[in-house]
Length: 253
Image (cartoon, rainbow, N blue to C red; front, top):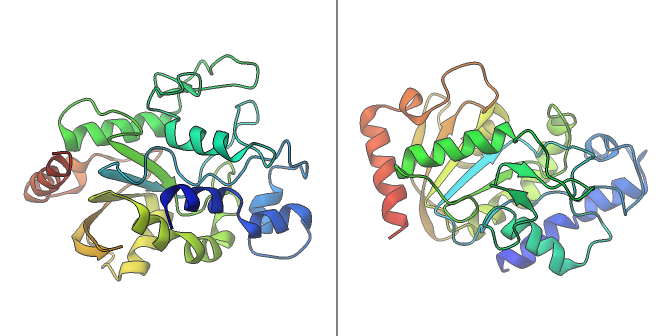
C-alpha cells in the first residue's frame, strides 16, 4: 500500500466513522471521537494521519495525538480526497502556502492565520534543527504524526483509543515512512514504541532496527510541553547524539 492510500485509509478510519455515527457504541475510540461534540460530517475533523511527506522525510516525530482548535480549517468527512491528501502532505512545505504561514501559524476558517504559533510545531522544528545542524524544511526534512490519530485537547480519550489505533496503523505507518530516525515524544508515544519493538524503558536511543525493510534508529524525548530539558543534547550522551546526527544527515544525501 502506498503512503497516499494509507493516508486516506487513516483519515477515513472506519472505527472513527462508526463512533461518529453511534457515539454510544461503547467502543474504546468513542470517547475521543465524541469529544468534538458534533456528529455532523461537515464539521467533524478527520483523524489526522500525519503532516509532511511521510514517504521521503528522513526524520519522523511521533507524539500522542493531534490537538484540536475548532477555529482552524481542517479536513472534515466531506472534503474531496485530493484536498485531504494535499493538506496533510503539503501543509508545511509551501506548495500550498495558505495551509499555514511560515509553517508556524495554522489557517483559520475565516481565511486568516492564527496569531499565535503552535508550540508543538515550533519545538519539533528546533529538535530537527538540532539533528541536522541547520534550519530544517518543515514537511520535507521531517514529518509529524501521533500514535492516536483522532484529535482532542490534553490527550482526552487517548489512553482508551491507543490499543485500537496503534494496532491498526502504527506499524504500517512506520513501514510507509522513509525516515531513518524516528523520535518518540512524551510518555504515550514512547511507551507505544517501546512495547512494539521491545525497547528497554531506560534507553534513550535504540537501533538499528529493521522496520518495513529499512534500518531505523528510535530516539526518545520528553513531550514538547514537559517542564524539563527536552533537547537531544540533554537526553542523549554526546556519543549517541553524534551518531544520531550522522544517521540523520547521511539520510539527506
